[in-house]
Length: 135
Image (tube, rainbow, N blue to C red):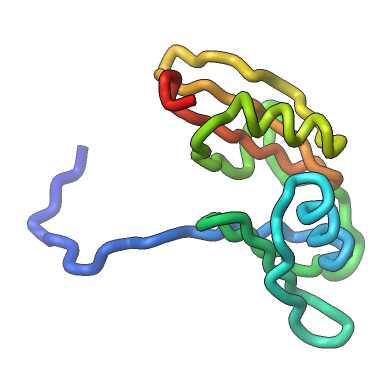
């Protein structure tokens, strides 16, 4: 492993994945209606960027230009984002009731997390996980 003598002086606070989609309004509305996010805003007219948030998690949607194939450019079982949550089993019930497509879980992983994996309307796969015992 590469070791550096450089000592970081700035604390990283958060990260927001940006998913490229054909329609940022429909994507934001899906995340609001199905995954329980709040729409933070749309930018430009017609919108080319949308932001959604839930608690301290934010996701950005950028409008794709030209021919667009839905879903992310990755292998079928790879994740596009991982979100840590307090109670994954409670979230699983909430998302199931909202009509989310849960493709896996809840399941306990060998690395000490309990997870669900959802697939959104564009094929993006997001895992939600919590440490067992924090439920």
